[in-house]
Image (cartoon, rainbow, N blue to C red):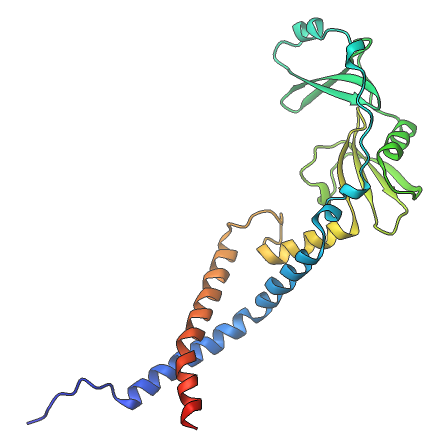
Length: 240
C-alpha cells in the first residue's frame, strides 16, 4: 500500500522555478529597450524646467488696449447673428473677433472696419515686442500649413525664428499678431522624449493606445516574476 504525501517534489519545485526564471529572462530582453526609453525619457523630462520648455521666459505681454475708446459691437453683432464674439487686440489696438466654425472675422473696435491680414513688417514689429530676448529675427514666413511642432494650431499663421541659442520660434495669428505658441530646442527635446515615454510615434498625444497598455502590463508582469524569484534567490545564497 502506498502512502500519499502532500509534500511537493523538489524536482517539481525546481522545474517551476526554472520556468519562471526563463519567463523573467525573456521578458527582460523584450522590455530592455523600452525600459531604457521609459527611465531615460523620464529623467530628461524631470531635468528640463517646464517653464523653459513652454518658452514662458521668452514671452512678453503686450499692453492691454484702451477698451473705453472702443465702439459698441452691437451693430456688427446684428450683421453676424450666428457668430461668437471675442475680444482681441492687434498690438495695442482693440479688436472684435467673430467666430463661426472655422470662419474668423476681425474688425477694428475703434473704427468697425474689417482688419486685413498682417504684413511681414507688422509681424516683425509685433513679434519683437512680444519677445523678451535680445536676439535679432533670423527668418519670417507665412505658413499655409502648421508645422508638426504646432500641429494643434490652425493655419495660415506666421512663423518668426530668432537667432538665439535656444532656437526660438514664435507662431503668431495672421490677423492680430497674437503669440499662439513658442517653440525652443528644449521643447523639441521634451516632445521627442515624451513620444518615447508614451510610445505614440505618430501624434505624440495618445497615452491610452494598445501598444503602451501591452508594454505596461508586460513590464508589470516582469516585475512580479522578479518578486516571485527573489525569495528563492535569497534562499539559494543562504545555502551556499
